[in-house]
Image 1 (cartoon, rainbow, N blue to C red):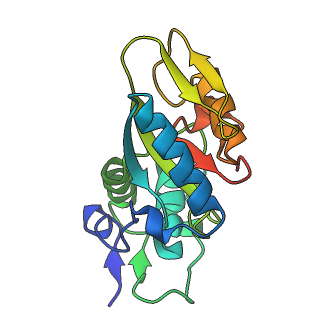
Image 2 (cartoon, rainbow, N blue to C red; image 1 turned 60 degrees about the horizontal axis):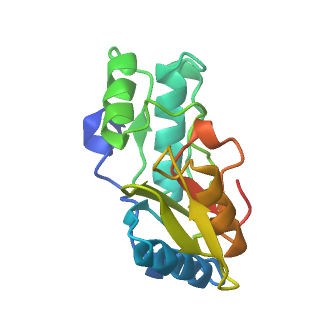
Length: 186
């Protein structure tokens, strides 16, 4: 049965936070990088790994509606996906989309969530990272890399460089999605 957009859609088609849902070799690469971060006293919280295509569709179009980049009446249907019978164009369309953006926690993104995300393929991970003070992390080859100063999160350029040695590449437009890592920077 078709249902208006709104907060109730956020719980449907949940995103995984398990590395087991990533594909190889990205899974092994990320898990090795994660071990190096934990050994360096970095707090690692995984917020997303595999994302169902239905969820990516809803995240993308709710963000687009809220940001005024598409009218609710112009959102294309996604008939091939089961259980995603969402009505975008209704009397409270903007409010429904806002509830979804808030529920997904994507309001601060500088770009819309991708319709064909690396998350759908199990080739991306979103992380919340933090640490205290200056640290030293091991690159994949075992050499040391100093992580000095701020920011103490996933946007630190030296941490991004360390991740790359493992084949874990931060989104190229770092500030557009500060938490996103994948196998190719997309």
